[in-house]
Amino acid sequence: MQEATASISSVSRRGLLRLSLGGTVMAAVPGLGWAATGAAAPAFTDGLPRSRPEAQGISSAAILAFLDDAERSAFELHGFMLWRNGHVVAEGWWDPYKAERRHMTHSLTKSVTVCAVGMAIADGKFGLDDKVVSFFPEHLPPVVSPNLAAMTVRDLLSMRTGHEAMVSGSVWRQIRTSWIAEFFKIPVVYTPGSKFVYTSAATYMLSAIVTKTTGQSVADYLKPRFFEPLGITGYEWDVGPEGISPGANGLSWKTVDSLKLGILHAQNGVWNGQQILSRDWVDSVHAPHTKDRYGYQWWLGPRGAYNADGLFGQYAVVFPEQNAVLALNSALPPKAGFNAGLLYKHFPAAFGDRMPPSDKANAALQARTRTLQLLPPVKASSSPVVANVSGQRYDFPENSEKIRSMRLDFSADDCTFTLDDERGTHKVRAGLRQPVEGDTTVTGNKLHHEYQPEVMRVVASGEWRDARTFVMTWTFVESAFRDTVVCRFAGPYLRFDRSVNVNSSATEMPTLTGTRAKA
Image (cartoon, rainbow, N blue to C red; front, side):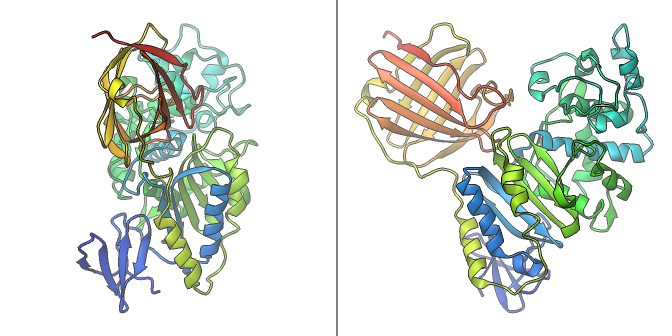
């Protein structure tokens, strides 16, 4: 297969983009790549050329082995893209996740924030050895300890702030007052620069420093300098108190955007001939600044690899010696052992020299990536209690979840679940024959690492497990979270349970029991 760029020749009635190259018709298959149909070459909207793996020194069988191993190990993957030598060689998304969907990145955001830091330093806004206290005199405590006074930008970058314990973004997301003031309340127990403690508080302060010195949030500062040159659109980045991006988290973007972050670094800061990040800065972010395998907001892997790493398995992994990048979105429990157990087991070992094409292995890989599925199909089911419970309101006594009432309205094809709590009235529509996609405002912060967007995209389905037990699956497809909701009916009572696939704290809510409201 030739590697070149071609013009669009037609758009098929099925909506597949067709191009012509060297007499071979290629069709752009969503979530798959380019499949031969009889003419031409790839021009994806993300601007990245495609290639068969073997043409870039990777066997399709090696990629299949990685996917097989992930499945055997019960690692929940949502989407991946693999790039080498200027080409995307494999990609796939587990339905209902899709290429065009945003996905919450958690601490992968740190490696984006540090791009803004490098650019601001290059612009002369501040320096690595500037003292953190010098930027925010208005927020300093009455007494500034010698250790706090000594802390520098360099210490924030390398997570050697002198703090004794980490601060999670889940803690600060619940605070509505100044997070800068909160930072200065943290005791600086050790001499800055002497001890590594991974903490989102350090990255937040980097974001705050960028905003203080540039007058823009990190997201706004990066827009013309990073997002636009790389063709990254449709992203969202939360803003905290004082108009400051959280820095350590809060960025949602597509899988390909994580890939582009990695590609930019693999190419020493160059994108389409433009030096976006300085070569020196790229070198510094993956230099071993600590014995804990940490650079400047990037984790260091074996054999020269380094990765942007988000909680629950959001990755941009750079293999500079092999000119390759792997991007992944996942839902992995904390400390799941994914890196050592799977990621670095298969890569960079899979990368070699150009090899003969294998039509059989490539066809198997394409067939696999075309049919990736996260959950089994919905099983049609019914229950004799539907007539008695549908449309009934169930009231709940005072509880820790602040839930007041629930109602389930069943039709032949779906169930509309309605919940009233202290935030208002929320609905989730669950398909009974196939999943239904929609928006919801349902409260979920305690199970979702304290994230509570105003609106969440959800793909929901429901089945009767037995005559009195109705189970819904809510997949929040712009995040790692998938909730299982169990409603058990017994006479006038509804027993309600809710759990989640991954979380940094509790994965189950306490069981609640409601009583049918009197007519």
